[in-house]
Picture: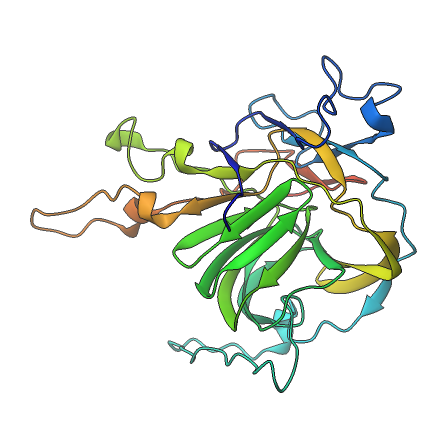
Length: 328
């Protein structure tokens, strides 16, 4: 979408404020007694507060109304989204499946949440260990609705049709041959422009990071400068009939209502953000001699195990949860 702006880098300390409210980002303080414009300061944590500085993930958001001002969550249907692997009989054979059909918009309106289908996985969100692979098929935008995953990070890979993702940090247009990551606890909404399909990798208990290059040297594979993080954008939007927040928690879906848009963040700073990456920028390490290298030379992002970490933790905006991580 023309006009969208991004900041470059992977895991950087970013700072952004909507140009409509200059000076909305506090200077020299994270949580002043009175924020500019009367905004509310909230910290969104992606790690334990006591993590070493090199692994500490958090961002401060300055919003028009506090995110916790909503009615209580209530259970809702999970549709084809699951992590109940024990309900599926094990099969050691090679498997494949045809692409999921995209519902015709003339027959049934399906948004990003309603179009989620779980394909496979291992581990679960309760133990903070493992992964799940989903597909999404949708034909309509999310109207006055957003999604929040309290279970882990989502790596979204569009296969057909571009998607406009609105987050608390700003907007991202993600097209086929691009990927994006929405990290745990971040609220987002998806707009589509035609029949749309793609893949999702969900990781429990770990965050994506760039792989070590080892003998490759200082450059190659995915370069940090090519990752893009959205700039601040807010909407001061009230919804008389109710704005729906869908929260995925321990593999189940819950919903609640509030009377304002959650995308009311005027300014923010930190290193815990959503981001996207264009796969055309991937610098391939080729093998042209006499043998074939391992597929790790094609790794864009990795989520490491924490066998060597005794107390790794992830937190959402309300609490900290100690957990192990998963191999990918």
